[in-house]
Image (cartoon, rainbow over all chains, first blue to last red; front, side):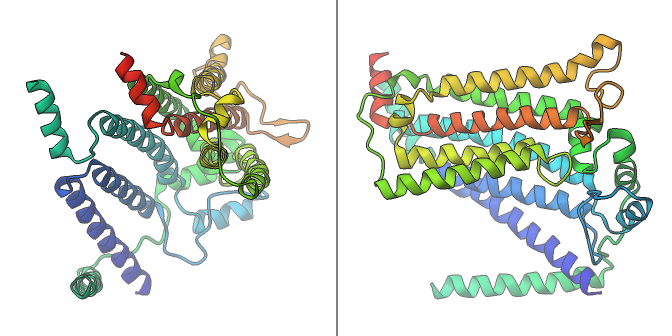
Length: 132
Length: 245
């Protein structure tokens, strides 16, 4: 019963996090804040995937053998968390990092050339430069 | 201030109430492994000679995915280099850095970080960890060195982003070779146990998993260090390059 409530609470918190990060991406003017919101969104997704593979049982252990005995295999089959979401999230983190790094490069480049990270101001400055 | 506190408390109350409602609607916490997860947990030693199921999935069961993922990160960094094009503008100022105290403490901490990161990477097939977490930990040394010693001091010592990208390219090539070598014997690409030994001199190396971990460690550490250098190019230096055309 307690584990069901904790699970539900984590689900709700993740939903709130998702809503806040989408708000940040859509409504914030600063590109840096948009990027921060994007990283919060991707981290929320990763935690959600990890949650899918977690088991709410004591003790919940990592899927790692120390002796490799049949008894240990039997114990892990009952108490180990799912290794697949962890492996997928590891891949996701790397891809997410690559995307974020590229966006960060572009934002810094924009700041160096235009002098602002405000999306609307940057568009104005660029439009003025084109008009000149 | 007071408004934001009220909003936060309201949000917390709503979250607690919504959780209770979800439980009342029949939401159940997972208590057992799903069938696919159970397969990986029970067969990781037999299939991949790896006591660590996550490492076995990352570098054996789904090894091809991971190699593509490493390539994506590599191309993102190359893309960053293409956007910046200002690597040669660095090194025009005398390096200053922070105080001697901070430099000495950074030197000591860097040694510790390097030792821990190597352990994380090389034990990746036995314990939680691996090439990516180990490489990320080692890159912290570069991220510390940039503000403490200054970018220019690193460049004077010959640590340039171009060289780091070359190291990353070499590590990625080695990673590709480990994946391709089994093809010579007519096996599938990214084959592990039928080509590489599970143990050498009594030490479990889990076949190709420890090799992948090592090369990924090199690739990630050099890639992240290059990133730290890219992001530290002084603005004046960048403007000079752009104005020069």
